[in-house]
Length: 290
Ligand code: ADP
Image (cartoon, rainbow, N blue to C red; front, side):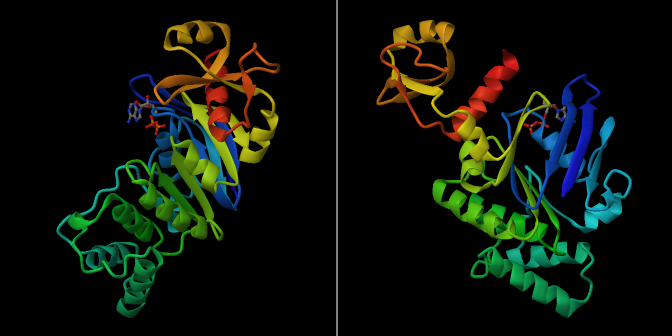
């Protein structure tokens, strides 16, 4: 279990990236959802001991993370948002290099670890390929392989599915789900479906503040019978936005369809829909600005 208490961080330029965030993250897959600039990376980097908060504490098992940084790092796997690879090196060679850096200095043991990881992330066949030839999905799976060196108990992956095509994304999420059975996995994302598909627990953050934490199912339950849908004319959109709590607008066959949050039917023409996690997410964001 990871316990975060009253974490705050203001950058030198005055941006409040984290504002009094408290959060408990148990074993399994945890989705940290928020728009760009919400503070997700700041939180991930702080947990990964790569930057200091101004205030607050983080405990992982018996460890005081902010005081026992080296001990945390030995249990940590981290896939940063901007994970870069050397394009001219093969997957096998670079993973071997990372394993050496992580302290696997015994050759036989390192070889076994590297080979097992390449198989686990389904890159065995591609092990002699240069990383520069990898697709986005292959690169991210390589990123997971390097994060898993040394059997981490805490795995942090920051926006890993951005830019992946649907098939690569599925493959990647399935891989994470398998890993999530044994360790704490924190997945930060701005893509609602990543959380819907994968996470037993979630949090929503925006502008550095925690807006919601709990089980996706609970959040959906709380919105039952409160989400309404209607096709509207483009010219009426602004009027609806002024009159109702519009959660989202999307085009269906070129015509706007709005989702509205309301305890009762807003007016004739609206039909009730089964809420999706996207509705939960947009309601939290709307409430935060209200
Ligand atoms: P997210 O990962 O959710 O996109 P970030 O944690 O990267 O959010 O950023 C949160 C806010 O802090 C943003 O407004 C961002 O511009 C700002 N920020 C991030 N890193 C720094 C930094 N090193 N110095 C100043 N501002 C930063």
